[in-house]
Image (cartoon, rainbow, N blue to C red; front, top):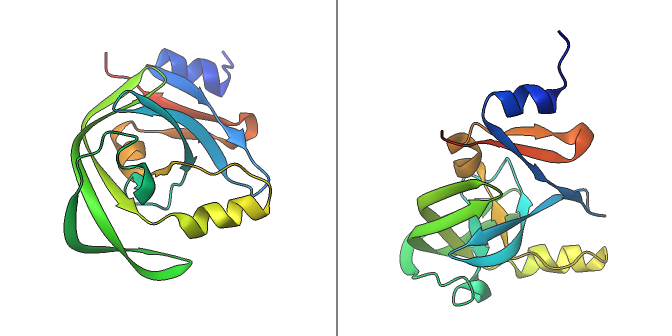
Length: 149
């Protein structure tokens, strides 16, 4: 039999999360962090899921200062704060005890604004993709996450 990717993954316990491709070329998805909905960039190159500094209270994050710094391909090291024991929901998938890294996303959102793209609240990183054995379907703008049965 010849199954589509979607059919095959759904049979294996995956759920499809629709992604929106924006003018910058990024894919955006809606997530629920600690009960609050937000828009996050899907970034397979980001090691951790991140949230903008100014969204700490909005997402009910209890962040702590840390000596650890973050680095990106576009800038030098940045100060971070960390928040543990968060609940992240993406479609039917739920992650418990998730660590969130907070950093200043002003430059990210400024770049998006120049392309008439709405600001994002955070970045969905490889920590989630690894935990869910994620599959990106660029052809159909979908993210598949494996849900524990």
